[in-house]
Length: 259
Image (cartoon, rainbow, N blue to C red; front, side):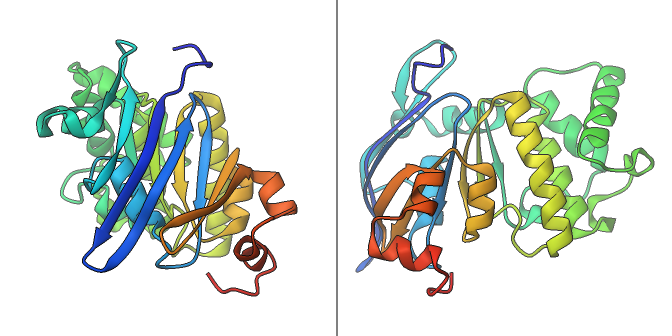
């Protein structure tokens, strides 16, 4: 798909839980290979928005339109549930904050990667295992652990395995929910370097939710700042973080507000 054709068009997405407005009238476009960061304090609505974008939560109003491989821009919530599930298994990936939510703990590390390959049509065992070994190496996991269960891995290792599982199938769009949350600082730093390398190399579009502005600066091209369910500021990441215009963004950047 040409880079001048948007991959995702989001218009007026709104979601409430009773009297609580989780996100309101969110509108933006996402382009191939672009990384969009969404930041804000806890309860700002960023995770709710991410789940709406990924088709995991249906908004009360608004549309999320995705340009498929047939070059058709279609509202994902006009699709059937099986169609959305197939989309999430092939074109999309989702990296959870807790890697255990995105892994099969009852099968091997190699099996987790291989299972994703089988979702996109891989069937030859030898080729699947070879590709799993390649991705274990790419995410810096010891190849001797390919037949080990993920539950025996550390948190950082599980997160790297989850990333491999999501990227091995060559998705066009990946959603990430606090991918470095809960990890030690040294583990976070290496994981961020790895993510940046892979995202740039594969030219995959990414929507990443994070409370950490350093993560947002390192990974994202463009940034949206959310407060009480509303996008209060958006723009190029460096512009937003170096010269924030909205009072709330200024508080975030100056670290006066704990996020």
